[in-house]
Image (cartoon, rainbow, N blue to C red; front, top):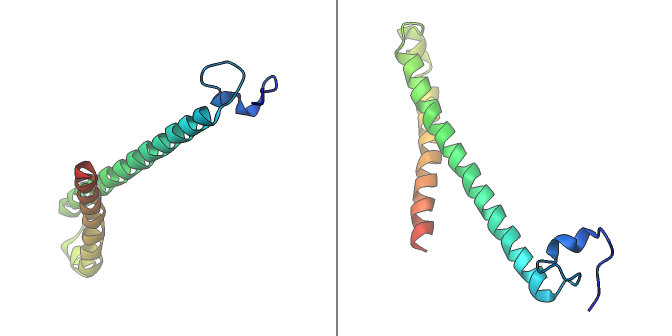
Length: 104
């Protein structure tokens, strides 16, 4: 077994503090890193879904306000439809994958 140098970059893997990094400690550290990365990815996806849902709500409120004329809404109808479909797709994909992963 190899001992670590003082202030070594690999000292973070020495979980029991004995100055020796075993294969088990490296494996455990890799597993923890993988779990942390999965959690970060999940949180980013959740934020993305919330932003998509919020943007649909805010956009709808703006469209129904008197600040936007009816003719402008009619002119942008095709684009607005694509916007809502895309945002709903993001939200639906997040919810579907979350449900699927919870059953896995």
